[in-house]
Amino acid sequence: MRRENGISILKKGLLFLVVLIAIDVCAGFVFDALYSNAKSGVAYQENQVFNKTKDSILIFGSSRAAFHYKPDVITEKTGLTCYNAGREGMGIYFHYAALLATLERYSPKVVVLDLDFRDVYDRGGNFGEDVFSDLAPFYGKINEEFDDYICRNWYDGIFYQSNLLKYNKKFFNILTANVVKNNDNFKGYIPLKGKWNGKDKVLKNDTFTIGSKLIKTINLFITKAQSKNIKVILVISPTFKKIKPEFFTIVNEIAAQNKVKLVDYSNAEEFVSQKTLFHDSEHLNDKGAFLFSKEVAKQINP
Image 1: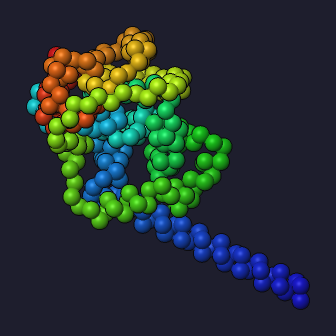
Image 2 (image 1 turned 90 degrees about the horizontal axis):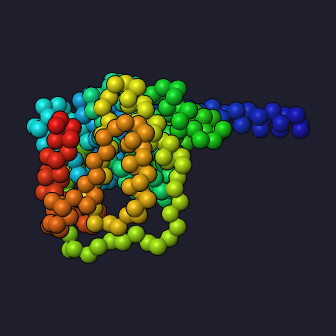
Image 3 (image 1 turned 120 degrees about the horizontal axis):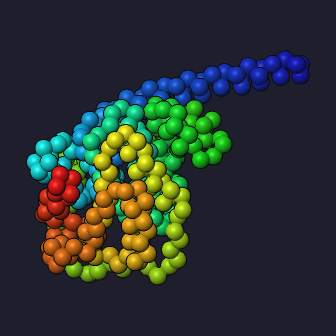
């Protein structure tokens, strides 16, 4: 009797395992298809950047990239096609992953990296190592270098064999991207409307720890692009946010070490003298982005 019960439990266990694997495989097909057909939002932007761009100029960076660079203006001034690969709320770890995915498909002529202070100081969240699980859906779809980069734990490569685990953080984004059709994404650029009320936003007086891994990744980003003969330009966008002087020292050292152009617009008079060009203390509105894009185009094609 005990033996029969044991066999019965084993059969049920195996059946459960087979069903679970079948569900996981089906989930992979479904979410891959939904990702590829995303019409708006985060999933749409990621799919464009990781799988579809073919433009000569790519803009990388956080929200200050996504909101500040108008590809059509840059194209008009340089004669080169441009896509804004900026991603709100993401730091250099994400941008380097996006670059790796891009270079697996083709090499753009110019890469602009808009630097945020959180690309140098360890602030955690998706500016930190939390972002790697966010990149899990791309595991096994780009190349071995990419897979090794996003696997920060010995078990990540095992867990990412499961589609349900890979897409765990993306369910909502993917579903909404296929339901909401209204898309304010113009070749990656997202316009911000309205004018800032003029109240400065000051950084909290908390501890700022320099992230050595973050700085290393900025250097890796530059080196990887240069290995493909891509022109790299580092930019600091206009802002009213008070940033520690140490940040500027660090990024200037990075630029000098890698022999790349660094253009600092953080306190550029033509922008900070006109608060009407800002949506808030650290983001330009659409009018400001238009003027800023014209300036950046001059740096790309002097």
